[in-house]
Picture 1 (cartoon, rainbow, N blue to C red):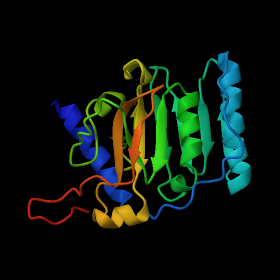
Picture 2 (cartoon, one colour; picture 1 turned 180 degrees about the horizontal axis):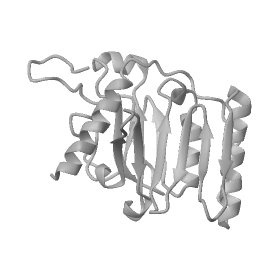
Picture 3 (cartoon, one colour; picture 1 turned 90 degrees about the vertical axis):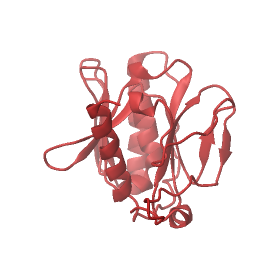
Picture 4 (cartoon, rainbow, N blue to C red; picture 1 turned 135 degrees about the horizontal axis):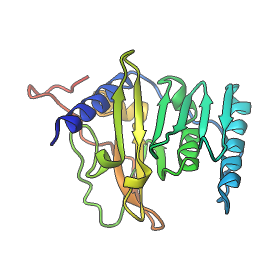
Length: 220
């Protein structure tokens, strides 16, 4: 494992720990669904409608840019999603407000070209997936498509790389419910794994094993 991989893993772990004391509320009601677009501009327009509809429901403020020259740039008080010139997608979110609109984040990432499925309280895997996770709840290959970067101000940005996603795969992110968080001592706070697209997934509400320190207590 390279030094860069080690640093990225440490950042992801630190961010998960910062979420361990956050209770997840019921997601915002789905009032607008994003349709599959034939053209890039139509796709961005659909994404804008999804985020704008959610903002109207929850009182969020947002700004959206979807021109071909700048890619996807979506800002709400819950999260930001920005396409970069190098093909990556950068996302940040407020740890309190994020849980009110994880569906909006999912739609924004998809509009930016990154295939992702986000759930709360459910953990899904593909037919051939053996379910392997590291102690932080991360499956094989996730570090190739998603990493965390901490800035000089201490703020963490997630960097998603659509070009690194294997064909026929998407990133699954499953956040633990409050009861599940309690059962694992708050860590891990989520599961990330690569799952196939276009096939039925096997989903369960059983949380991953608690991440425990060598002494046997759950790490916080």
